[in-house]
Structures are given as structure tokens and as C-alpha cells.
Length: 186
Image 1 (cartoon, helix red, strand yellow):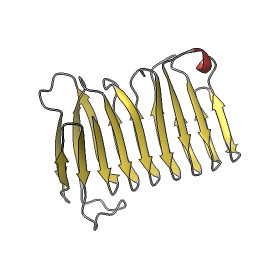
Image 2 (cartoon, helix red, strand yellow; image 1 turned 90 degrees about the vertical axis):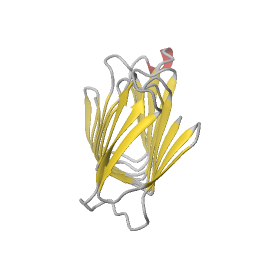
Image 3 (cartoon, one colour; image 1 turned 180 degrees about the vertical axis):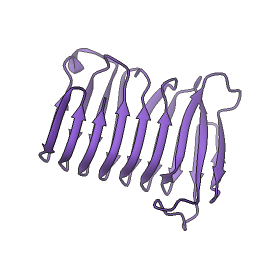
Image 4 (cartoon, helix red, strand yellow; image 1 turned 120 degrees about the horizontal axis):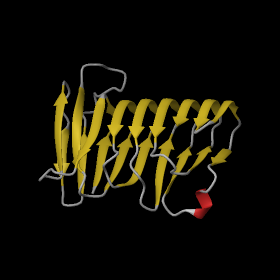
């Protein structure tokens, strides 16, 4: 399954429950999106008047954790809190930048790609203990942390790789195309 938020997501909390009968549940405040569901996808489409910096909206989405999911945000992400620890995550795409995002990641199955197209500010990924990560930051940045390593200044094109990344199958591959400020992978 894939869930897509268009044109972006703000004030959204995502969680997972393996005991659900339906593929997802959603509740929104303020601006209500158009929800389209097929057998393979869910599209959450907000009106064009939707702005990421507003505060009159938000929502909660619960995904069925007995299904594998790809999560995609097209158009920018702000104030996203995702507890995906029990979800079989196949991919995470944040297109258009990310601000004030927290994601609790599950144990990966295979190499799970996380792609952020755009800049990053105040973004934190929390992974299970012992799961290696490769982190590429194309645009450079400031205040980056990968595990115990901290960089105050991140040159363009920096790639950091945890020990053991190449030796295991289950891992995260994170790629950020823009610049970063306060990106944490703990």
C-alpha cells in the first residue's frame, strides 16, 4: 500500500495498528482533504488553498500495520509526527522540504529508502538500536547528527555511513537533496 499527501502535509500525526480491519483510519481538523482509496493506495488531497505555515488544520492517520506501506508527501512537510515502529515501511518520500518532523522508524526489511527532496530543518529520525544507516546530504548544512557523530558544518555532497552498513541487508538509506539544519538520525 502507499499513502500520498498532496500538496503537502502539516500538523499530521501518523501511527500504525496491526489489529485494524480496514487499511487505514483518518480524522482531520479544519481544512478537510479529499480522500481517494484504491486497493493499492490512499491519496489525501488537500485543497489548493492549503498552506503549510497555517495552524487551523491537522489530522491523525492510522495505518494497518499488517500491510506493508510506502509513505509519500508531495509538496512539503511541516509539523509531522510519525510513529511507524510497528509498520512494515517500504519507503518514505518527503518532496518539497521538511520542517519540524519526527519519525520513529521500524526495524527495516531489506534496504529501506528515505528520500527528502528539498531542504530540512528540525528533522529527527529515530531508528531501532543496531540498525545501520547511510546518510547523504547533497546540499550541505549545519548541525547534523548520525548516531554518536555530530557535525556542526556539513560540506555539500557529504555521505556518512554507519559501520556494518555494507555487511547487512536490513538498513536505512537516507538521501537529502537540499541543505540541512538540525537533522538528527538517532
